[in-house]
Figure 1 (tube, rainbow, N blue to C red):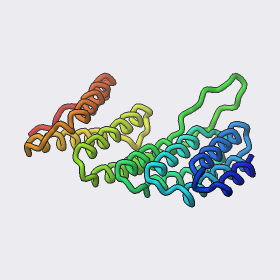
Figure 2: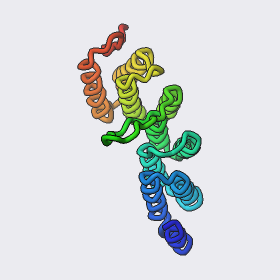
Figure 3: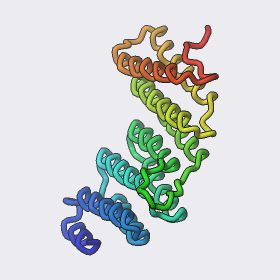
Figure 4: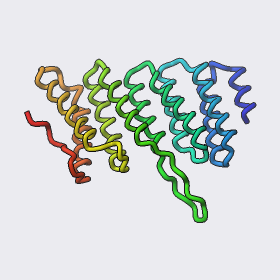
Length: 237
């Protein structure tokens, strides 16, 4: 299969780079599911090679990074060293995407690579050893915040802040000890501040209506959880 996909890629190259990448990733997933770690690693390595050599369109790059990251997050049979090598490369490519919104989303999505969720076990199966590194999760989220803050469009920046807040909420709910109330409260206050300053300056707010509603839904969920120490109201003036 490896030879077949490689031949397809080498003969058509730019015309089928996206297809070749998807096929390498799919083969990597199948090899992982059947317990062939080294074979799976090689397929994912080839997917990265296709990405680096032949995918240059910014949108296609974002989609490719998401495809690879999603597949790696679902893998279960890599040793720690091989898994860490692959996910670090995926995160690095995400952090180098051209467009800031794509870069931000790729970086916060990469955080999930360091927080693997336990998969359902069949009776008699050995328990999975899940890979989790709360510190790396927080690093991804903090980096994503810096990228979001660098966006020129306020509405885009605020929407990204809210998307990142939802990630904070997820990890807080998952009891990731590095994601504390301090980070939740700080980001909630930052979002309130951006929404309020836009109103104060009299700037057109139509572009902020969707982010505002998204923020309200997120706050409603946080309130429903009843977490102690999380402040969902606007900061006092």
